[in-house]
Length: 329
Image (cartoon, rainbow, N blue to C red; front, side, top):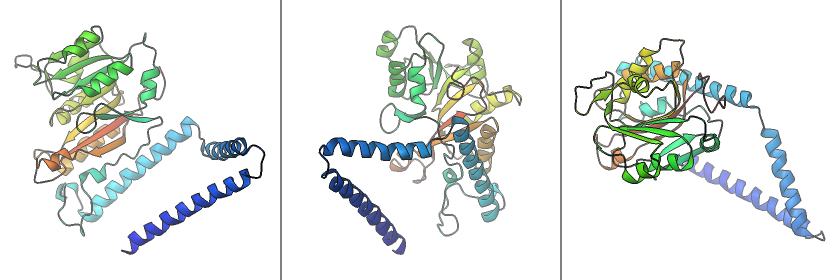
């Protein structure tokens, strides 16, 4: 109750300060021949003063973002050691608030700030995704190659449609269950849409129907060396798929992905320790989480005893020399 009351007091104080500030401006403006012009000038000066004070270089911004990410990693390790000694002993979704007031998702927060605008693309709810630096993709010259891979469509192509509508990127889409990408999308973008009924996993097996491919084999098949945006919603196959890509490119080689947009499925086949080891392999390759949100559909439809087993993440590759976000290409 004290905390709630304290928050209310702070909000009231902030509101009061804002009201006093506006009233003072209005009072002073009334003493001038052209109050509107005077008010606009003062407001612009006030805003520009704060913008200039907060302005930092791109290098400074990303250095600070890396610092805050590193801080979250340190907090993650400290929390696990302090509470459990080892991640193998911790539950992903604890039942006791006093002992563990957090879930597995709290240990991997979106702690790296996107250096550009973040925009939700596609429909609200399941199917839409957050893109870091959407303005960079929309402004990228349409006569230069921009590649998007989309794994897992699940009957909704609102994300894919908006990306095609607003950028000049070319898209390769794969789904294990859908036999068509969407007639309207393919007809409207005949040279920019490529769809195949196929799945993605840790091994390539073309004898299956539909066939399964690794990410690296699909890239070779399509004659690609780099993917600007990789979107994945593949019902648990994300773990083996990205691990296979990780193993195919020995360190210190760069992971050929500029931005990873992924829904993570924390099913029973994986535990907290295995998940965190997988996550830290991504971090080791330079991937940093810039946005996250739990997919509460899993809770509302009771997929797993009301546990929030699904979460969406947007990660950008900070060790990528071909990144549109960091180097512009």
